[in-house]
Amino acid sequence: MRMLKSLVSEKYLLDEDLSSMTPDSEIFTKRRSHFQSQMLPNSIAFLFSSSPKTRSRDVFYPFRQDSDFFYLTGIEEPLSILVIEPEQCFLYLEPSDPEKEIWEGPKLELSRAEHFHGISKAKSRKDFFPKDISLLLSNRDVLYLRQKGTRDHFEEKILTEINLLSQRARSGKERSPHTIISPNTILHPMRLIKSSEEKSLLEENLAITRDAHLSLLQKTQPGMFEYELEAIIEYEFRKQNSYAAYPSIVASGKNACILHYTKNNRKIEKGDLILVDAGAEKLCMCTDITRTFPAGEKFSSIQKEVYEAVLESQKKAIRKCTVGSNMDDVHKEAVLSLIESLISFGILKGNPIDHWERSQETEQTKDAKKIKDISYKRYFMHRTGHWLGMDVHDVGSYYNMKKPLSLQNGMVCTVEPGLYFSPLDETIPREFRGIGVRIEDDVWIQDRNPIVLSQEIPKEVSDIEKIREESFEHISKP
Ligand code: GLY
Ligand code: MN
Ligand code: MN
Image 1 (cartoon, protein in one colour):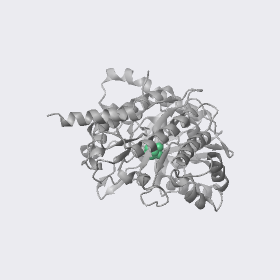
Image 2 (image 1 turned 45 degrees about the horizontal axis):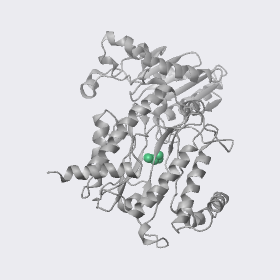
Image 3 (image 1 turned 90 degrees about the vertical axis):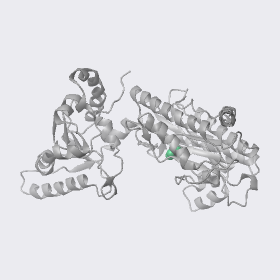
């Protein structure tokens, strides 16, 4: 199986490596052709790589390539521009600068970019502004340009150029594009359906994520700090040449009720549950996994009841991930199951379908706040899942003309129900307060048989407790 490889380090490849690398670029060439085939006549598309982002003064955040740019090029270089016309593609790259390379190392060379990427021409970025841009835009009808609404300098400069061009257009000799469309309209439906190469990469990254979660189950001990668990996760990720796809959540005890908890600075106590939401990312492909496990050897009986309720809801929701179903159906299935459990705990009254229907009626109204306080939304306040891919919350619509989009083969989503009982909620029995559980897997849609790509990461109570018990036996041996 061909794998998607980053092409950033090609400069160091020997010539005999070239032939083995070449097929990789076919994936990107194929994607660009698919994009081109959907472009309007006499159009042009500009796609920009990410820019380095300052962390403090001269220090930058680790560079992460823009997902759309990587999807079409496989190139991890910053400050690059991809130009797509219906018939050909150009690439503008940061030119070689021997002074800069002393500090930053070599960049992808222009000639290499052409060789590997099926790009008609690779040019220096210095040629784009101000020389080539007006030629590229002149007499063009349609421009595909993402307008993020941020002050991204490339996009702003292009809009300025269009204004200049329209002023010159008054002379009648030139005209500027009359329509600007987001390239997302073509790209994001493409990215929503994953290829077999992308599935392999997801599986590879999930194997790393599995190792990290397993390592936590084996190494966590009461008395450790949450950041030590984060360090174990990051060690596994980096050891296998990947990064965290998002800041890892390590939430022990009542911190598990904070949905985006990332402080990770509490000392873990024996009776705690620990919720860990962490996924590896390599080659711009994200994974997104949550597991919840006891700090001690076993779940307490109340923790186990809540955990089993979430697990049951998750399994039912996963079974709904079939072609023709949709993410609203998946959510409804998870919610109904959770409501049933909340009723059995004595926390909610009535019947599940009434709760669901009332929540739907009030979703768009001023009662939305009220339903959040009175029904299941007080304990399960997020959606059950989202698309997963090159972005953790991946691109692609969930609705088409207000109707939920049907699941299709090759889509990937998370399924991640949870129950969160605030430590401050005096309306619920005391023993529930401060318990937070989420279980999240990554699911590949395939006909009527969804594949849980993360199935090797333990989630059954008995499997988790077995590993936890073994970890204590290991520690107590002299
Ligand atoms: N880790 C982010 C999420 O679960 O959506
Ligand atoms: Mn997650
Ligand atoms: Mn998620």
